[in-house]
Structures are given as C-alpha cells and as structure tokens.
Length: 469
Image 1 (cartoon, rainbow, N blue to C red):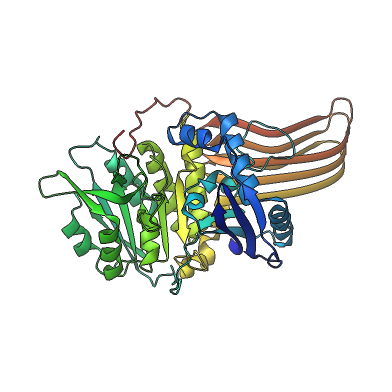
Image 2: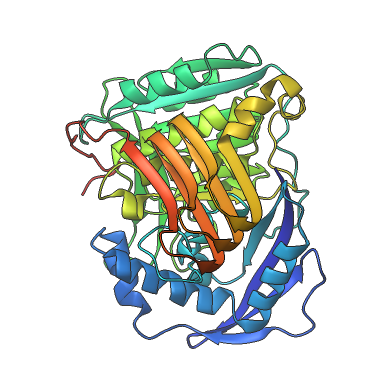
C-alpha cells in the first residue's frame, strides 16, 4: 500500500491550549490554525491507561478527546476529504509534528472517531485501520534519510534480561522472529544473547536494522518525576543490570550505520516534560536514524512477542513499516483482556518519506499473494437479493485487516446477505458494512460469521511487563 502524507502540526502551547494545523495533505494546507483545548479530565484517563486499568468505554472516551484536540472540525473535514481522493491501494499517513513536549507525550495512537453506528468492536480507532498510519515526525534541520536497504539486509537482534528484573520469554520471541524470516534469503539475522554494551557495538557494525528485546525504562532524576532520561537495560559480564542511556545508544547505533531500530522495551517512546531528546526513540531521530518503533508505556511480554512476530512477517513479504506496525497491533488485539490497551503502546517514529525497507521485495510479483492476505477489500452492489450473497469466505485467517462493503437495494423473502464467513481467526479487524434499503419478510443480514478464534482452548499465560513494576 502506498501512503500519502497528511501532516498535522501542533504548536504554541499556552495554559492548556494549543494550535493545530494541516501543513500537507492530498488537497492543500490550512490557511489558519485552529485553537484547541485540553479537556480538564484528560489526566485521569491517561493515568488509568498507563496503569492498564481503563475500561473499553473509557478508552473510547479518551480516544474521542484526543481526536477532538488533534482533529478539530476543519482538520477533520480535510482528513475525510483526503481519504475520499485515494485509490483503493493507497492509504493516508498521519504524520504528526508535535512541537511542544506536553503535546508530544500524549498517546495519539488511541485516536478514536465514532463509527456510523454504535457497536462493540475496535472499529473507530484510527491506528487499527490499515488505510491509516500514525507516524510521529521529529522536526530537526537534517536530511530525513531513507529506510530502504540494499539486499541482503543485516538485522541484529539483541536480548538482555538482567538478574534484577523479571525473566522475559525471550526464547519465544527469538523463535518467532526466526520463523518469520525463515527462508527469506534477503535478510541475514544475527542473534546476540546477554547483550552488553561491547557486544552491541561489535555486532551492529554495518547493520541496517537493530532490534532490542528486553527491559527498558525511564530514569527519573528528581522526586517529582519531571526530568529524566530513557535507557535500555543491558547486562554486564556477570549478567547484572547495566543501563545504557539514550545518548550512548543513539551515538553507538549512528556510528554503526543503523537505519531502523525496533525497541521492544517499555517506555522507549516517552520522554520527560523538559528535554525533547530525553526519550530513547526521539534521541535516535536527533542523530539521523530515519525510523524507530518504540513503546510509550509498559508492555506485557506476551503482547510484545505477538507484535514482533507479525511485524517481521509483514516486512518479510515487502510491506512497509506503516503496514507492519498495523499488522503487529492487530496481532496484539486478539490475545486477551490486555489487548484492549496493549495494541496502542507501540509508536512509530519515522522521518523518511517512505516506509518500505525492501523495495525489491515490495515489487516482487511472486510475493503479491502474501501481501494480499494482509489486506482484503470486498465491494458488492446488488439491486435485489433473492438468494445468498457472501462477501468473502476464509478458512484459517492467521491475520487480516479486512473490509467488506455490500450495498443492496432490497432483500427478497428467503434472501440472505453475509458479509464475511471465517472458520478460524487468530487476530484482525474486520469491517462489515451493509447498506440495505428494504428487507422483505424472511430476509436476513449477517455482518460477520466467525466460527472460531485462535486460542479459544489455550491456557492463559502469565504476562510480564518489560520493566520493573
């Protein structure tokens, strides 16, 4: 999918108010910025979100408040109009330029626009829509660079679990990454266990991409938790804790030539309220690394593994970083109660204009079937339905982002419209949109018929957050 930039800039914070404007879109830019205000009860929702004690209803309320701030009427109108200009194979990239730290620290990945009718589904959260990518852009006076790689790509995956912290299921994460890239000759993977600062720099020489799996956190420097710095928690030679501050990590990876960074540790996407470069991911942008995936809150180990698995599976068939992040979110979505929140924890920072890491693979027609499996759209129009109309039937769907639209004039007696019939679904978001003018006696409408979701009989696993709690 080709993404077109829709750039939103938030600036001039003052006493809970700030200005929002569209500086780039498929249409044009705004002549004047809109003034918006932060809701007085926003802080309560944010605290509950970070503690993972927020209900689905409150999460939607938080998402609606975020949308009211970032997408006020004029911006929202331009957003809808821009979406209408896109062809079926294109999407919109919401590129967020957040000038003030109080705005930058808000979890914009939970933006929510109410669907046309109320329904108990994830539909409405923009980050779960494959047609929309939410990207954070750090505005700095250096060239944005490119994430594109010449084949073969060198990927370094480092694991660290210091003795002072809960043990993580790094073995499973390694297995899933290896499985996702098995047979992909264009990617050379190096796994580094018990990652130390010395091993990190030695292994990343000449690497295009670095993945860190382990604990991370934010090191507060005062009791008021206002200033601090991000760090990933490496090991020393004895397996004990050895934090690597953000500046050291950024400079090390820059010297090695790394272009894309995946930070699986908690809070690698956040920063304090004073220093713009105190967070790990923003500091990587500062030294010229074009893209990073990071976590803005603590993330449960099982969710992090699920995200990484789908992320690399998507990249392995030539999909972009935008699409891979959405695939990872959808993988988290189907994994239990925590999935109601965890899918919004990953954050994509990207300054490059294109998120395609493997241009050659993206253009390979032999991989199109695999790419198509990640995104399915069905559109049907019928004047009068006398029999059965099914949008799509799928056996096992390990992951999908699907939209089925049926427009029917009338459903005659005995007619039935079925949007999607799926035998087994591991994770995904399915939109079944049915517009019918008239339903006759005995006519039936069924949006989605799901026989089984993956893991129904599975035993629950203990979730370990990737930081000390």
